[in-house]
Length: 580
Image 1: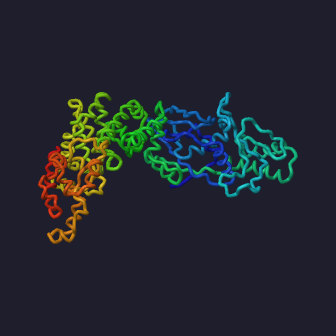
Image 2 (image 1 turned 135 degrees about the vertical axis):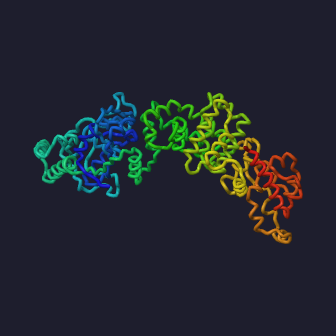
């Protein structure tokens, strides 16, 4: 990767002529202090980091919004100004360096308008200010706080009206005037300014002339702009370079870039809409969830595009962004219904191992005729059963690992085919299609059942696995928790050894699925307060049927533990094979 360099004046001459901003850029946010520190860094010969440019061909501009740099900045206003390109226009997009180049543009060509810090309301609106440099400030003078990184040595400041130049200690020069100078005229201009300054001491004259020459050199002579130009036709490659180039500063993600593209193309504030939805799904429902912006953006693509749902900039064209905005309310409603439904099953951030499974459920709700109908289907007992069984199987079999986009695409096609004829969640068809297409088998064969039995108490999937063994319950509101049926403290090692049962066998099975069940909080308290043998004998037939437990009470003696495990495994296996 080789870098080129050029002068600030040369780059400024290209801004808004052949250099523009892409739609991935965020708004200009620097304040006047940051701008003056940038100019001060230049005057002190400090590096101001490199820039990333992208030479764009005609094809890459067809579906992209392109914007001008701000010249006269007005604080608190949206000043994004799109441009219409003519065919065969050769342009360069500034991928990294917007804040710095805009700051240079404001200081050297334009202005900065804001309100005084102590005056929120101004009848005349924001005050328009230009950047000035005090040519009499000595940069070598001792500073108040040398250790303060924000302390500046040169006298840059913004003023509404030209400050008086006729002072024995200050002479304010409008920075933009330096662009009127060239090699032949800047010395004449300096001489004229010295005459305007009047009587100066020798020290003041040296500072005055040195500051003026330094400003001229920094802007017009020195190659202060170091830049790399990317020529790849791939927008996503350039974005990846941009993200990595910024990795040392404020961390950027692909969603940061895509959010900027959405914000500039939505009629409402896309950033607020998506951030608010993330917050709502994670914190405002009955259970806590763990959703991020990437999931929301990708779900939007899944709902609105037929193929290729990956988070690529090429998928966020003007057309697709408008399509997402047009369907945004339905997308939000489908996601809320989906998370409310799975939370009702007790599935949330604690045990949800693949959020992509929720995406499929949400697509089902999205495809129903209207919101009222979707709400009705969300509480339909039979439909809940189908959704819960499919969700548990999908998570337990890990069908969304690897090429999850293919799995999601396949699920979309199944839902599209069936939702017109039946408004129920097509769990069985999803299983059949995915099995035929060679995806991980959702049905419970001997291998899958073996894996199910080996799920331990500590595994994140333990609750989800157990919940598939039960009929519908309000898992979230009733606060069901997984517990061990036989507690470890029940086993006396010496007695078991005398009966031919080893401690290793007990340890092997004590936390496996056949010794686990789901109990409500009140049931757990009752179980812990009673002797195990008394507690288990006090259970009725419904309890044993609900938890797939053998009814032979002899199996609940510690020395019969391994026999109990065998019988429970048989009941669990029968239950799993009957699910689909």
